[in-house]
Image (cartoon, rainbow over all chains, first blue to last red; front, side):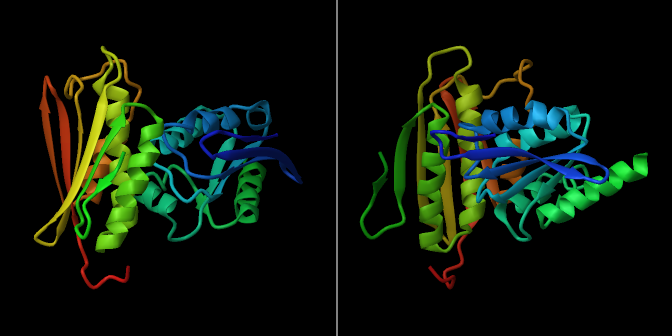
Length: 128
Length: 135
């Protein structure tokens, strides 16, 4: 699934199969704020995410996010049955937002999609 | 529309209270911050939060109004004010917000003042300027 908003946020959702289950990968490209945070919420609430064993939110293509976007990620982390992991560049403005809001203990952050997928697969394996 | 005084760091912007104004305000103040040596990322995030608060909360019981932003340099600080002509800061029991916006602003700015009356709210934020910073 791929979508682009008038506000410049592009979102895609795909399913990745691992030995330990199905992982949904949500990729965002563009700035996230009040004008388009609902679109990110829609992607995270898609059937692909809800029916997966884990969700990776790849925010490497997001140069800016404020609390409107962070709130969506936090709500998804609380609502989604699958585990959730976030991909962020070290030193990025979005990682700084996560650190200022003191949410990195609730939202596991990884530097690459592969690292995040491996971590979710490990958690799913440990839970079995 | 943004109005920038020639040769100074002063800026005044008036925007409608709508979601699309958040990015307009953020980019204008971010550009100014970079040009004077303040932290562009900190100013952008703080302005985004302040404008978002106005859009979401200032006009809950009335038609959308106006958000005014101004900025100037004062003794080594970039002073940014975000004001609205809404109903002032009041408890919002219907809000599902996590109180993140104001918390972030207080961490990002060197100093913050909230001035709330029945005629609206003004959030004044100060940011350190590094006059040696590359522009």
